[in-house]
Amino acid sequence: MFLTQVLAIITISAFYAVCLILFFRKFKKEIAIPIVLTMPIIVFALGYSLRLGGNKPAIDLGYFLTDSSYIFIYSLFTSALVIGQIKFWEK
Image (cartoon, rainbow, N blue to C red; front, side, top):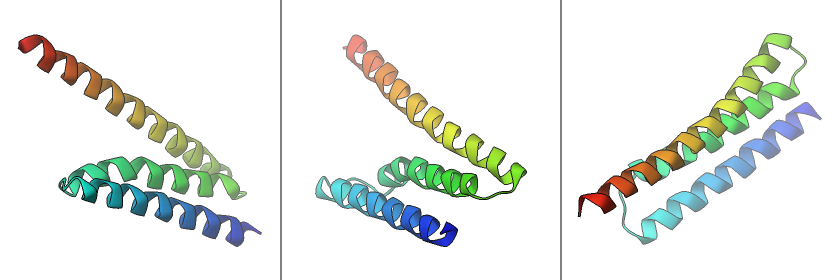
């Protein structure tokens, strides 16, 4: 069961990452943008996989990785808003 769950998590995470990369290719953006946006998906999937195991330190690390991926997305979104406001008010 554990291996099936981990394979499902990896498959879905890879699907999300490929979708993001293909989406950004339509706009002819550099590869750094989709990599930055797929990193939280990969970190969250890794953390969730670690939470499925029975080892207490691995579970704790899994919780840290899932929470840190949320914090990364939140800080990325907040940074984009702040930079957008700075550019808007400089005009």
